[in-house]
Image (tube, rainbow, N blue to C red; front, side):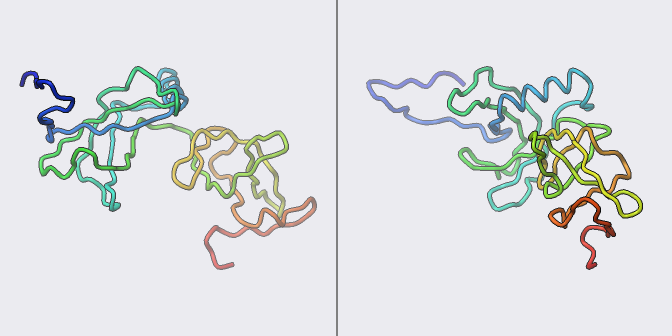
Amino acid sequence: QGALVTANQAAALTTVQRLDPIYVDLTQSVAELSRLRREMESGALKGGEARVRLLLEDGVEYPIEGKLAFTDVSVDAGTGSVTVRALFPNPKQELLPGMFVRARVTTGLRENAFLVPQQAVTRNIKGEAVVTLALPEGKFEQRVIRTEQAIGARWLVSAGVQAGDQVIVEGLQKLRPGVVIAPVPAGSSA
């Protein structure tokens, strides 16, 4: 520990890096960070400390879970993002400085929300997100929903659908007023 001194040169003599534990810097949009803070303060998200999992460049998941250490206080004006730092134990020194990884951050649990396949969500003429639901007796209806964020190939939906609703995923282009439908479970051969 101490200061590294250079004499009459632009470059440092050496770089000292700590590998265990190791920090992983992640970027997050300011809008997403603000939304996350509001939801945690209002109680919409329940949970404790945020957990972080890493996917290495080759797609293998790093076996040890990390935790968020801090968020940068300044916004990058070019990208509109802030840096979020996570701390990971690194006993086998598998994580090295300069590596590129993907992170999955679990921030909390949202109750009464649904994941709807993105292909089932369209936009109406007002630009609102809508899904088409199968109703009894071969009928269908469009319903406006509120999407929060994309998670993989699905939308996190916080309003507009309820448990038991049958969301139509395929064949939306064939639906016209007066058409009688016979819904089947997604992925079936019918």
